[in-house]
Image 1 (cartoon, rainbow, N blue to C red):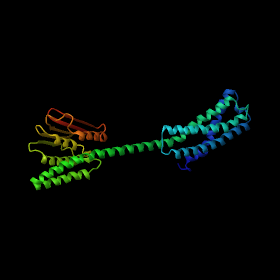
Image 2: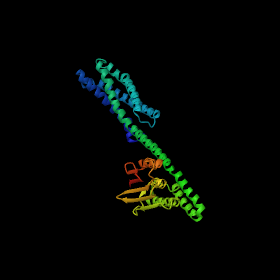
Image 3: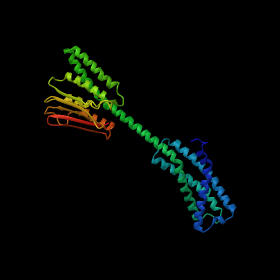
Image 4: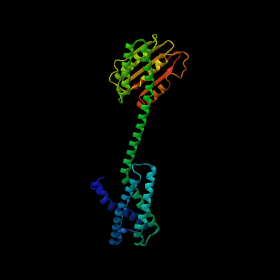
Length: 346
């Protein structure tokens, strides 16, 4: 805060005398209520001496506490915790105890009938209550800034952790993809070099998408083109008896999605297809919701919990991180088919 701003000037010059007057008159009114005395009937010089002393003490009080607050900020910077508040309150209590008994108590000891038990009680409780109020008001801005800074730091750390986890999960798709594509091209080289070259071109497009076109979100049309190229590469290495049905809704165009969410489902279908040897891949867009489903025939002896393995587990985790509360995912194996359905609210 600028030391020459009106607010700063108020706290430095105007607040101390007001604080001193409030403390003084509160103590006098409480004491007069107990003793039956009326302090305004006393000699005005005596009252003015006490009032003047309270104002001077208040200037000293504010100066000491401002230095104490700066000490707190240097010792525990950018920290907001119950432990810090408790430590600060302990310091405030001890310093206030010194002020009350060293500076205020003599005013009662050398006036009227001397310091009585009720003087000790009032002088040790009333200023403390006002000090706690002053502490709360004076420190509210600092604690609010510390709280906001802590929240921002926590969100940054959480976001960094999520981004690291997302990159790790996304990277786990690459080894499967590279192995399958290279394996396909390897076998093509012995049969049809021209087709192998075309496969290399498709492979380069797929690799470029994974390596360079990884914006935070992409258009659904880009993701669909990626899947079409991937499916074409998989068709090359699949048996001719494979019955493949692919349908992508024409309304899926510029909607934004996170990339590589559908690849594990398609990759899983080609990996585990068997039995009657058919695969069905569909994507549609209805009322702001993208629906993607993949079904494939499987051998009857395929273990019920095995299809997809870590790939589907990674997909579930990515969906939880990217679309919390905005997606549904179901994957199950029937007697002769495995199906996976994914819906995302865009």
